[in-house]
Length: 126
Image (cartoon, rainbow, N blue to C red; front, top):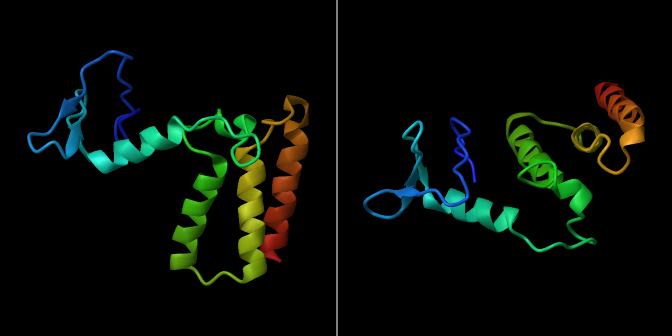
């Protein structure tokens, strides 16, 4: 777990500071009060058992969240603000996927993954 504000990461056996009502965690470094639900959800996502079909490890081990979750959040934010055509949204999702996963399956193909991301970037802008 990591503080969403200052990125403080407590040691494995460190004390976690909880608010008086028990509904928030207090960062010992920046004193940010974060709702307990945030930490509970993060803990569930980070501690999921391996699932090679739905959650392959090579896509989940590089970030605290799976890339598809990051893409989902970005796409939901953008679709709420901008009126993207369906194909443009598809291209943006693929661009993010290739950028965020570059080299995860095969470190020798990072350049190829970035080229694929750039392809979808150009497609989206046409």
